[in-house]
Each structure stands twice: as structure tokens, then as C-alpha cells.
Image 1 (cartoon, helix red, strand yellow):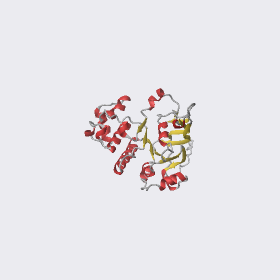
Image 2: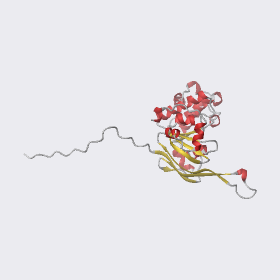
Image 3: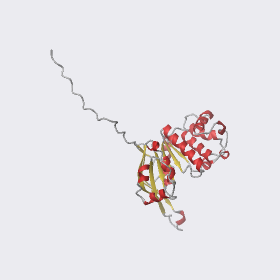
Image 4: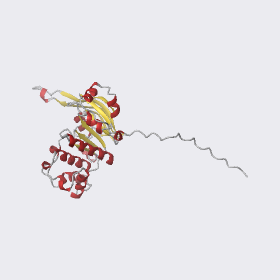
Length: 289
């Protein structure tokens, strides 16, 4: 009787867990430039000179991260955010959203992306329709994208941001600043986006309201798997909320990386100045893991 040879086994795998792959970038920005006409310096005849606001920026935002964009007033952080969600078109460079360059797309071609790219504004009072009730404000984008929009749908979203049914009938002027910002958050998440740009959303709130809004945004990012870009001038907020940080100064990136690394070893004098200017609370280690 012939003996059937036993095939050799593959080499044993090394013990211990395999390293997880690095998150893929949802946004990749390459060589981004933007300038505005300086109307104040316009000569009597001829064109106004241009001021370069964004100066050749290169960075990535990993999918599923909360990335802080920080800098002093005039650093270009809000302008950068508006370019990312294509409220502004850059002069040059690429803005790759999930591998697709959206930097120079005409507005008509951006319509399918508007659901995925949502924004929460700094001043909720000016961004909420004063003639609409709260539930109507939240339902409007749902109807636009064909994903419901009934009062019950809106109330379910409001409940998720901590506003019960009693708030549905109110108008924006009947709410506190923190409540209005929750409505802004509810409107953004109502269409189940992939990315949210939050532009200085707690700068006008008192300390307790800030803490509650930040905790809400942190919870939503975790539960919904959102990628968030959080614009702020406050390093203590960035350190508490974000996993990654980009530091801007006069339209240029002076530092970027994981929050714990940048804060532990700031290489830029600008970052060192920003860190020294504010008291820093303890990092939420679970959030950074």
C-alpha cells in the first residue's frame, strides 16, 4: 500500500495580535492655495491687489478621526474649512474627498456630495431660519435628500441631541445659545453624513454649555462613525476633543500630527505659544486610543 505524503504546513504566524492598518484618509489636501482681492487697497484704476490667505497647504484627515484645525484669528482656519466643504473654490491645488478631486467641480456636480459634507456654524442664530419652527429646520435637509422629513423624523433627531418634543414647536429666538447649537448639530446629523465641519461652535457659549455640546459631539462622532474637522482657536478644547491636530499660522501649516504627540513635543513656536496661553485639562485617553 502506497503512502500518501502529508503536505507541509505553512509556517506558524507570530504570536500576539496583528497591528491594525492605519486609517485611510477621507480628505487629502495637496498644494492648496486661495487668495482674495484686497478691496481696501484697490487703486482708482486697475485691479485690486490680492492677499494670499492659504499658502500651499498639504495634509490628510483620517477617516473616523476628529481633527482639530487651530490657529489665531486671521490664520486662515475658517477659510480652509469652507474650501474643504466647497463653499469656496480654491485658486490652485487638489481637495481629494474619498479619492475624488472636488476642488474645481462646478456647483451642479457637487449636489450628490452635499449630503455627505455637512457643516455646523459658529453663530447658530444667523444660520437658523427665524421663521421656521425647530422641527421644520431639522426636517428641511431630510426632505431635500429624500430621507424622510416628517415631524416624527425630526423629533427623533432632536431627541438624540438632548432636545425633547417640547422644543419641536419653538422658534430659534426662544432657545438659549446652547440649545440653538444643538439644533444646528441636529440639522447636520439628520441626513446621516460622513463628514462634519464644526466651525468654532462653542466659542459663544458659557463654560458649562461648552462642555455639554462638546460631549454631545464626541458621542455622536463615536456612535455614527463620523469624520469631524473641528475649527477652534482654543487648544484646551482641541486637546479634549480631537485625535489629530493641524496648526495654522498666516495661511501656512506650522505643525500637524496626533494630539498627544504635538502637545507633548510642540516643534513650532506658534504651537508653543498657543499651548502656553491656556490651561490644559487631562486628555480623554479612551478617545485617543
